[in-house]
Image (cartoon, rainbow, N blue to C red; front, top):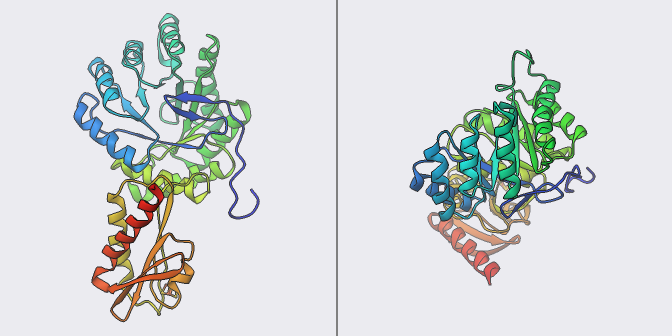
Length: 362
Ligand code: SF4
């Protein structure tokens, strides 16, 4: 990486398509999440996918634990626009049914399917439909008889065994993930894999935790890899609302200038000059932004503590607010455009935001 605001140089990887979303081959790093609803509860899954879409999710995965879930995928697919990934373990019939239902990608480890003939059928059906397969190895799931320790080398070797099964059948639309909870281990595993193959990599830290700690672990792990140019698609795994995973994913990508979309909230750290209740105001703005669909470009919204320095310090913000002496000031591009009573300033900021977004849309 060169200057601080430059974009990390990306590893060259092959490209696969998940529905209309490319992964690898220089495509923008895509953001994935996974529904935590029952796949058989079609209305709940569709509603959650709509929220994920609004938050800027690119690809969504659903668990397929049984045939009823596999069949539900067809109706879910009909009602949503995001490409769907079917998460399958062991049972090849579920994979065939998910493909039949029209999913755009499978997450499945072919080495876990017992008979070679069954693997052949799944691979043939995926190839016929141009559907890629993600091999997902993680430290909890590798064969401990053969790999007593989930070292980075063990994760990579295990993943390569699954890869070879697909390659032996002439199938090359492969994405690989090697997730570990241990961040340095995950970084080393992905780094090794990036040296050994040119398949696109799905990067994540597994079981990262509750949102606060999980966000930090994911940002450190995924961020370190992306900063080194490794990673074609990401998933932040958090115990909580999957929409939060997408928001965190965006913040990671925006932090590295890899993608720009949605709201970025800038808040000054506050100091003795502060003329508003900064924390409470910033929270109010944050909550209001979360309720709005993510705009198609990055929109910077600033909450600054004082009139003297705030607008200037947040010059790059699209819109912002600050205040002092009971007044709230709304600014754009470093210039104050409105003065309102302080109890109206959050509403006035949102009105200004509507104006900017309206102008963008025209
Ligand atoms: Fe202090 Fe004002 Fe800067 Fe905030 S914007 S840190 S209140 S000088």
